[in-house]
Amino acid sequence: MEQALSTEVKETIPEGKKESSKRASLDFQEQIFDLIPLAGTMDITEAQKKILFDPVKEEDVEIRPDGLVYLPWMEYVSRLRDAFGLGWAIIPQGGAKLQDNKVMWAFWLIINGKPAGFAVGEQEYQPTNARMTYGDALEGAKSNALMRLCKGIGISLELWRPSFVRAWKEKFSESYKNKDRSGKEVTLWRRKGQPGNGHEDSEKISEGQTKRFYAIAKSTKATDDKIKEWLFREYEIEHSKDIPRNLYEEICERVKKDLTSEPGAEG
Image (cartoon, rainbow, N blue to C red; front, side, top):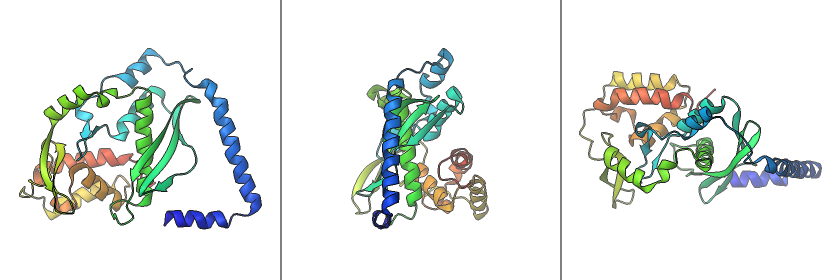
């Protein structure tokens, strides 16, 4: 649908506007070429180096169902913010592209007016997935680009060191069996103590607790779809009424922290 819309818009652009758009694209490339000599020339203080390159805190690391360990995007934002204040930004190079149900979006990392990296972010997007709108997919690609940009300058490199990953998974995670949509049994991963298939018999929260959870989540200005997407992504819980009672307080605390500044929150 998005690709068809893009084609339709392109066909209706007047010739004068097309030339203006082409000049703007060339101007942007010229600006990038002007910035290239500045790449790698930024000096940072020892205090900034400590903020950026301090070891990852084990308790901040998360794991995806496929077993990939990662830091939530806000941990990268926190390091950049603490090191540079508002003196940094990620700037898109053009618009996002949708290819084979995957959103691709390229970004530059700019720190104190100088280019510090370039990366392409990716996010799977299925139009039939009610838990993720196209806007959510754009924000996911942006967050993925931020992670790659920070990796490029040396932040949280432990997450790509096999010895660290093995030790963290042994200490903090566990595997469990589940079935995919086709009914085939697969092995998935989660943090120890998080629910998944195998925790269905856990005592669920009450109706009043469900309403309180949504009140806390909505106070972050996140949309209903964003709240549902977060709950499934972090705990593999499809409905708030299925939240286990033993994880209720943790989830309420985390949803407020995670969604307060997460991309996709409403203004």
